Length: 558
Picture 1 (spheres, one colour):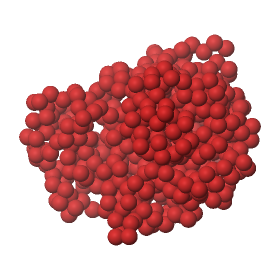
Picture 2 (cartoon, rainbow, N blue to C red; picture 1 turned 180 degrees about the vertical axis):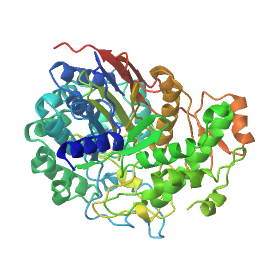
Picture 3 (cartoon, helix red, strand yellow; picture 1 turned 60 degrees about the vertical axis):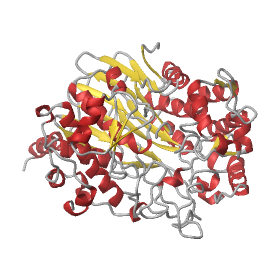
Picture 4 (cartoon, rainbow, N blue to C red; picture 1 turned 45 degrees about the vertical axis):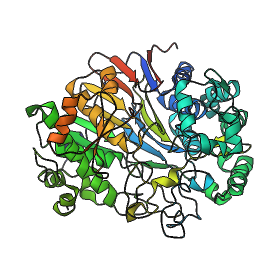
């Protein structure tokens, strides 16, 4: 076969076998984060000549300082990246890993029962953090500026302090007892053992020094040397099991994304150890078999609930760290979705018992979205798990440790703090990464793009799902982040409804279809989204009204 024919054939295969969207660069940049100072840090870096990835480093570090209840250097996360120059899409996996001394039964008491306090409070609950390694990796491999430049806003915030808000007070109050048990945490985050008054400045001199070491030496400034020794000694004295080898051996993983097609949209989301991409794909593949426009809003919610139920059932059975287990490949297959959807009764809720035989909280995290003037984008969800993580600050470092070990299945069949049930696939093992629900996501077609994510524990995936459906219906950014939310996760067998947004008639409709409902005493989530109209180059961005974040669109002055 002549060479030019072969070349044309290869080109046609590339076009048909992969879906990429040619888009014009936006005239402006947009950033949506959970805190105004983090949004400001991102734009500061863009105006210095940085790109979206530099901004992501700056925002990640800034949130570690000004939003300690949600993320930090002592935690982990997933960064979903899209590079405009070559259309590369990749997930940066900075999820925490279990220490080498961790073992399957480490949180069981003398009676073989899960001791929940041990997996939530104090350094024994902490996995080896991934955020510092991710900051260095993203800066080196994707950014334009130096790591020192990107970390400078966070260092300034740590030294100068940030103001206490009512939102901060609420989360501190929730974890007050645990924070009081850590002398360093008490000194930094509390005022005489009580929540500080509004506008009080929270300064973090030790954290500034740790950030400066990372700025000067990269990841080794955290995982080796004096900071590493302080982390191991401080955690060990309070009951932790970290070693210097655990820190030195931590590695970032670059993972292929999970792609799902729904109607004419491509959804790009997080891969394992995030369950987000697979669960989201399983739900959307089922929903595509129903024309939701044929049903009224209450019938739609019933069908959506049933698809959630089935996807979360599979989550509990099959999902975990893919470096340790083999995950069935069929979970996101269209043919498998037909099998699942065939068991859905359009007028009646399915019992969980039937499901077994018929099928083969949440401000604890943070999210931000970035789209720069070059078309680069980032969707990042970060966490230390429960609000303020383990509530333990390692003396001399300012580092608040996570309690992500609770995301493992500490006891097969037992629920974690978010009520999620796990099995062998997510059992504790040395150096393993716990299963997560964090779901940073891109959704796009030829005309429109949305960059989205949210905190919210086990409800993250369903929040992203509902937002995707709203986006396809044509709602704007503010409408999407403000919409009422509902959730089903297989167990407990109930539909969880936000405290506001559902009328009595709508609640009765869930019951009419046979669903048990639980009306929560609060709203949940803190969604940050950016929408880009590729035809007009217009940007739209919004920060969840349930939080205190800031979404801004700006011209970059360079």
